Amino acid sequence: MIASIFTLFCYILQKMENYKKGKNVEEELTKDRIPIDILPESFLWMHVKGGTKVANVVEYAEKAFNSGEYRSVVWSGSGGGVPKTISCAEIMKRNYDVHQVTQLAYQKSDEYWDPILKGLDPIIVTRQVPAIHILLSLDDIDVKTPSYQKSKTPSKFWPEPQAKHQKKDEDYIYKNKQNGNKRNNNHNKQKNCNDQKKSSSTNARNSGNKNKGQHEAAPQPGPSSSKSNDIQS
Image (cartoon, rainbow, N blue to C red):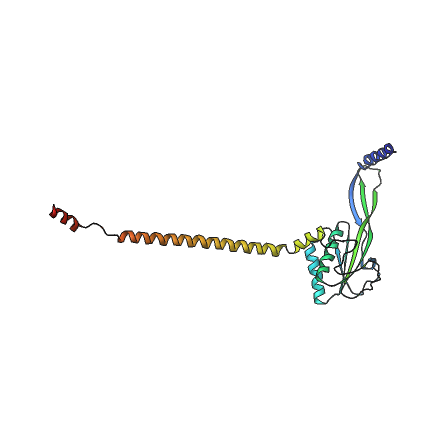
């Protein structure tokens, strides 16, 4: 059995040497295909990808909430974008008292392999990529809705309140502020150090001038003293 599998594997590798990697075509995801049945009529849809900057999209969504433009947001991501999608939702949950519904799904992705040799047909490999959709709403949602969750409570998808990827992204959001404080502290320390050096140098100069003045004011033996000694002798 193992020998047969190994032989098949070697055959596939040998055959794939005659192909080169082509394009990837992912199934287009639209609002009407989000697998959440209780979507509101108006909501902000944030499609997160692997290269998305968490700080930017979270800031955009929070501005929409604060301005009153939207009261619901759906975070969607697939493949490498799933961890960042969860991070975005978790960060917003800590800033707003929201109701949450989460649904897992799959997104089809076609991988094309183009032949190098003539006479070979192209190969299309279809993969099912995991995807996640998270609805966060300021309005009430029926608690009987599947996968419903109240804000700031653990769930089976992220049971720990501080997941590693979430903490990393939260640190990234406030990194500039922290670095700014460190720069200010270092600047103040350097300024204090320079002031102390300047003060020490000034004190040293003043002390030197004082000693010099005292030295110049000391009495010197005069000619009258020498003359008196000569008369006595």
